[in-house]
Amino acid sequence: GTAQVGVTGLAVMGRNLARNLARHGHTVAVHNRTAARTRALVEGFGHEGAFVPARTAEEFVAALERPRRVLVMVRAGAPTDAVLDGLAPLLDEGDVVVDGGNAHFADTRRRERRLRERGVHFVGAGVSGGEEGALNGPSIMPGGSPEAWAALRPLLEDIAAKAADGAPCTAHIGPDGAGHFVKMVHNGIEYADMQLISEAHDLLRHVAGYEPARIAEVFRTWGTGRLDSYLIRITAEILAHADPVTGRPFVDVVADAAEQKGTGRWTVQTALDLGVPVSGIAEAVLARSLSGHTRLREASAGLPGPHRPPLAEEDAAYFADQIEQALYASKLVSYDQGWHMMRAASEEYGWGIDPGTVAAVWRGGCIIRAAFLDRVRAAFAADPALPTLLADEGFAGEVGEAQPAWRSAVAEAVRHGVPVPGLSAALASYDALRAGRLPAALVQAQRDYFGAHTYRRTDRAGVYHTLWGGDRSEVRAGS
Ligand code: NDP
Image (cartoon, rainbow, N blue to C red; front, side, top):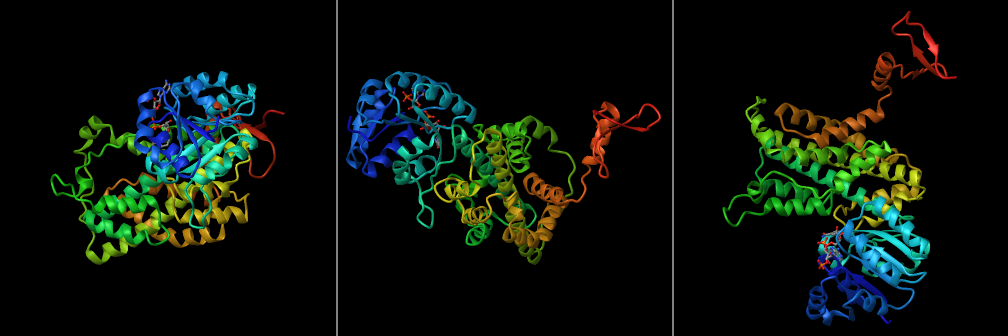
């Protein structure tokens, strides 16, 4: 074969990644279960580069130079297994198969083990940026063997987005499931960020009393500062958009029930299993869920609230600035929770994920791309063992300065009866982490009372139990 790389699965993502590869001068073998898609790709975009269309898996594999590099871009779940089962017998030792779909990292670990038995390198690669990113430069998070990374690196670096400093937004994340795990956390963080931004919008609307067009201006301004990010930019555009049908602000004609495809839920489920508190992501998932409970919402719509008028104009401007600070601090805390989760998984699975590398890869191409991620990269580069971004002097200073305004924004939201689960959960996380003592002491005492679950003491080593049902003397437990 003569093709340097093959793509199987030519729906929107696979087609655009194949075009991206071809536009960078690579000869790309292309294959799809339904041949019409292969034909459509070659007919529509054949002029963009060198494609080798294949009708069967055998033809596809035969078209590739060895060791083969195959990118599988099919629907996640059972279809991925079906395609891998079909390919595996046709491949040789040393070949590299990449799954660029949104696979669960546990599936990726299983697939990697099975293909490794045949001597085939299996790479689970998170790909972010949607169809536009796939065509013009996604963020790519590959997990697999170092040999597979060496084979893929030139291709992936060519097609990946480039950060402001020119570095490609891809890097070897770690072995087996590490890449898909990091992509999952990316999506979880994306949920949290979107929730925080929409809460900021809600406050500007209902507490500051601003109309969407004016809020668009506020977001545009914020987007030129430390909040500079793709999500802030698209938010400004959405808020400035008028519905062509009714002329009303577009955001007002969209039904307020947010859907989800499941990666946010995966993130929270996995975080619970790892014992890591990702409250920002969890609140975002729960808020989407609540928004869809129409009957519950209708039944609750008449419940009393505070009925406060919006703020006066001067107060509103001051409040808008407080929201910027609350949003920034909450964003930092929520992102930090994502890094905590990656650190925990990296230890659990022995992945050796470098936190700064993840930040670097997320600087471009992906949905959460933001100027701020370069500072996260720098913070972890200076100290890869940083237990929290808040231990970085620069970030700690910013959040310290923002915290009075953050509290005011959350308090004002509560006074006005505007729900801010994301902003307030982030603040609660900040306050809990910095607290000298937590009420967990009382919880542990309660556990000892009703379940003899024992406790440790602040003043002495050992594990203890109080005889609550007896004379309430203390006994040493265990030993
Ligand atoms: P879809 O998820 O809609 O999947 C359609 C593709 O899967 C088609 O090529 C289809 O072939 C193929 N397929 C489905 N079932 C089988 C099967 N049993 N055997 C062989 N092929 C099968 O396509 P997308 O392009 O949207 O996404 C591809 C992958 O990328 C998914 O895993 C998705 O989660 C992930 N992804 C998507 C993003 C997006 O923005 N859309 C972003 C990042 C990742 P056929 O034409 O024959 O039906």
